[in-house]
Structures are given as structure tokens and as C-alpha cells.
Image 1 (cartoon, rainbow, N blue to C red):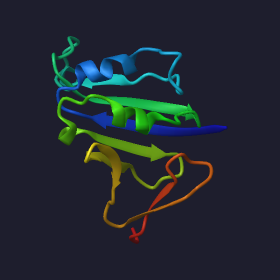
Image 2 (cartoon, rainbow, N blue to C red):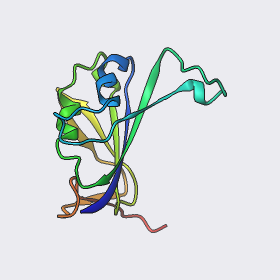
Image 3 (cartoon, rainbow, N blue to C red):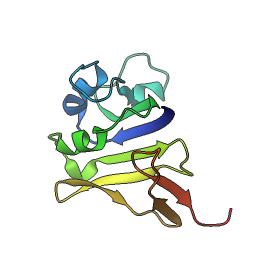
Image 4 (cartoon, helix red, strand yellow):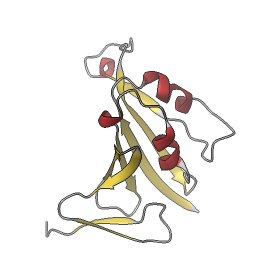
Length: 131
């Protein structure tokens, strides 16, 4: 199935935790790798900064089952800082997941509604306000 999704992970001090997800690993359910985004790119330096808080990935197929549970299981140094943004192909905006009580749960965003959708891992997130 040809379906894309974009995922952004924000987390403080998580360079070591995210490093394995930036390399191919045949044991994972998905094959794409996260890309590290550091603050060096914003001020024109080609030298990566020592700290990175953002990683991105785009899935071109419906093959990212297990990603959210995998992220939930990682030993985050600051779990309260973890934010996972997910936008599936048909979503109106990114959905937000955060760790609460050791679980990665979706945070309800104002003026949005998530409904089950068979072609999507997370369902369909729609804006409910009239723009």
C-alpha cells in the first residue's frame, strides 16, 4: 500500500537513545531511518552541534507498525520532554503524543477529532473548526 506518514520526535538529551534509529536495522518492523536535525543547520554551520533535540522520518508505505510502541519502550533520559508528532497522509494536522505514566499517549488537541480509518495506523485526524 502506497501511503505516506511523517513523524517528528522531540526529546531533550536523547542523542544516545535515538542513535540506533538513525541506522538501518533489519530487526525493526520499519526500514526507514530517522534523520537528526540539530541547531547547527539553523545558523549555517556544517558542523553538527553536540546536542540534538529533533529527529524526523517519512514513511512512504504503510510499514511503520510498532513505531509508537518502540518509541514508548526506549529509556528516555527525560521522558517528560518527549513529544512525538505524527501526520498521516489524510490528516489535517500533526497529532501529538507524549509520555504519561510510562505510556506514550495521544494528547487531544483543541478543535480536532480523531476517527478510526482502516488505511491509517493512527486513524484520521481532522480539524473541526471552520477555516
